[in-house]
Image 1 (cartoon, rainbow, N blue to C red):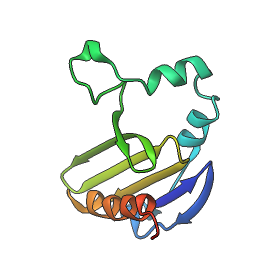
Image 2: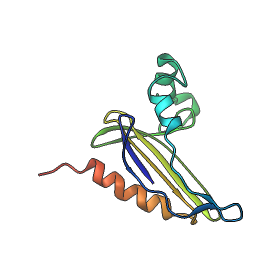
Image 3: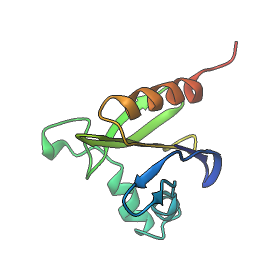
Image 4: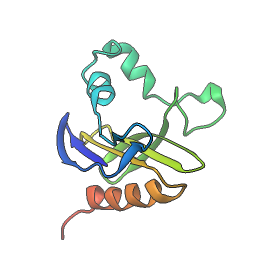
Length: 127
């Protein structure tokens, strides 16, 4: 699990093995997120296009590979996936700088539950 803000890791914890046969430990990696947000992966122009809604796709919440939504702290671009025994969540809070990555070696909804708790922590406004 990883939580980052503005390219700096706030919390990182990897547990268990990604591959037991080869004894490869789980790890978290933010290279994709940092490259994308710092315009090293795409130019500023194409990065902006990546996070815009695509009405021509006939779904208001989908961009090029990301689901788009709004939260109490601004725009969110996310992607998730799962197959039997694996579940993941990747969320970028575009306006606040937070990134949440949760990788799980358990079937759905394991990563979704953890990501939702982190979302609540990020979007909670103190009284």
